[in-house]
Image (cartoon, rainbow over the protein chains, first blue to last red):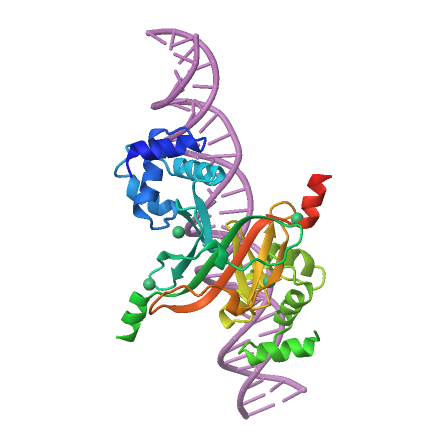
Length: 139
Length: 139
DNA sequence: GTGTTTTTTGTAATGATTACAAAATTACTA
DNA sequence: TAGTAATTTTGTAATCATTACAAAAAACAC
Ligand SMILES: [Mn+2]
Ligand SMILES: [Mn+2]
Ligand SMILES: [Zn+2]
Ligand SMILES: [Zn+2]
């Protein structure tokens, strides 16, 4: 996606499209790797002059509050971020630690009987071993 | 459940049923409130003489590894523990912070096409506002 | 361009979890 | 049952992720 489109997208969601914000969103959108703060920092420190880890925390918190990113809590010791806010599930591999998407339609998710409850977010995630790592173990 | 039953249950799962382990599992089973470590500590410190928070961490980690408890990562800043390892979903209320169960059958959970993947755990959780808190807000 | 508001930065503080070695408990054996 | 070895628990210190905060920098408005 072009930086122009990213800027417009942020603006539409009430976020002023400042340089670093656009770069961080751009990173999330292009890599699609559900990175942690440290992964983002490690990659963008080379591209953005004088980037602070605190800024990444600030910007990501803003993104999540504004609804343009999701914070995924699959493992207790790390938070992963996702610019894809549509309905989908996540698989985390115990071996390579990668997180990948899988498609599920909203209608497929069971709708429990929670009378009078307001539902804001639905999360479905699976843990296990991905096919690549499963093959390596077998060999 | 009786302490006897708890002991037998732990033993069957390869866990030596020491006093504090039994007390902690007993707490989890009877309260069913998906407590954090601090919640367990705050409650059991009165019952168990000289209980250390480190012990609770040790015992819960052992429980999770042995498969007699689940660690729930609904929010990034807390881990909640559950002695019910059967298939069910969780709802967390943003207002009162309570976590409650909802029943879902294994067959209801969508089975994504993950060719060659090994699935170990499936988690489904919902965030929102519970009926009790929703009523209070309305009033 | 000047002054004002917002954002970013760097460092310190916080909070949860783990590491570790000593003390206590439990299990085993004579 | 006493003695000994193995396991568990404890208390403290270390670690790691995240937040707080005030100063510096950048963006904005006139
Ligand atoms: Mn995703
Ligand atoms: Mn539960
Ligand atoms: Zn893998
Ligand atoms: Zn509530």
